[in-house]
Image (tube, rainbow, N blue to C red; front, side):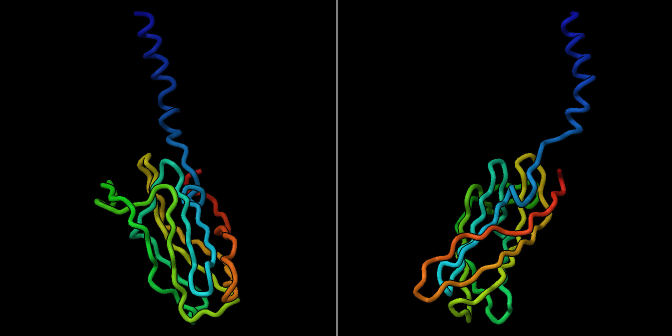
Length: 162
């Protein structure tokens, strides 16, 4: 009986502080790491590395290129997996790496551009992040040149949850 009383007392004393702390969530920029590289003067490869325990919504991805005259074509998205989501119902999501090809319209070798990427994802812990907007600066390679090295999204922002 004493053992049960001690266990109950420990639960009553320590449980509220454990519950109040909640799950430790990664900042959005770490949960959904974004990088991109120019494959050639007409194609950008965009990569999201989604951390374990998190997922990214396929239909929340949007991409734009600046300056506007360069323009972006229709992104080629990987298929993803259907997930029954408490927030958005049946949704296609990405876990792990997701690689997207984005055609660039009216670009020339050596052009500098800014890729603007909008995304939204959730943690398996039951928390969805607000929509994120990130930017990357890229230089398109020469026509016969090799792909550029990946560039990570900057700047890192303060998390809403930490």
